[in-house]
Image (cartoon, rainbow, N blue to C red; front, top):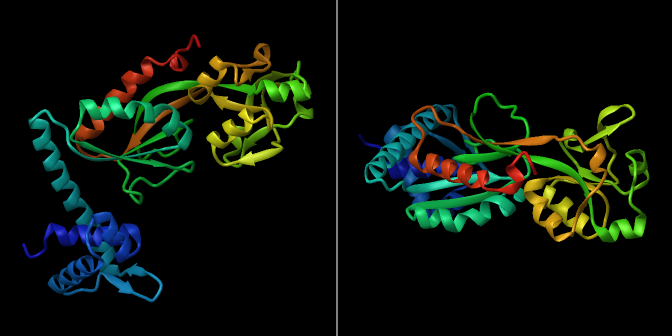
Length: 303
């Protein structure tokens, strides 16, 4: 075999990051070293894999075909290494996790120390994104998604669910009055999401039926931003218990219209791409998170 794994890694890293410099940073190598590895690979294959323009690198047709094979080879080598680690009962390797910033901050971050103590050979990479990402493009092993899943190409493991409630700070209510009916909400400052629009349907029973579609006075892209706005007294929000339970326990946020609130729970799923047996590092992380969530009060249906 003429091609080396280092050359395959350099090639896929350049494709994934979009530049030789970024690939070098990801691989902890020099840009010249990555460039030489890429040139050696092209010389050995006697093809051009990437077109170099002044602005970016683009895959050639041959590069597209070779990329799929390169990814498959690297994945098989990684899996073989994981299997050896599993034989030693020590799951190891890099584990890349993506989650929306509220779930990352309020749920996953508090679990990291305990997980690392139990599995010290697993290298965690935590990435926050409030948009749905492509797992392959972002080289992600696990993504935690809140709400109904729409991508049927992914494997999914349910981790639990979290109730949503309408909330406001005592300071906001003191300044603006506490709404006693759903109809009175329209005269208040309502805080909502830019997208998806379904997140702006609040679990409230009203004269026209169940579920109130609101028109936010302020729209933001992140649930954590909404939480901070609500704590600052900017308006009324509808957020999930996993990020507001501590606020409600302290009295920093109080629930509104509890008598008119439907029990709507957002499903929490871990999604991943795997065509073979689940990697040990992924399996142990999912088991750890699932067990931890079972102990959380917000995850119980009696909350």
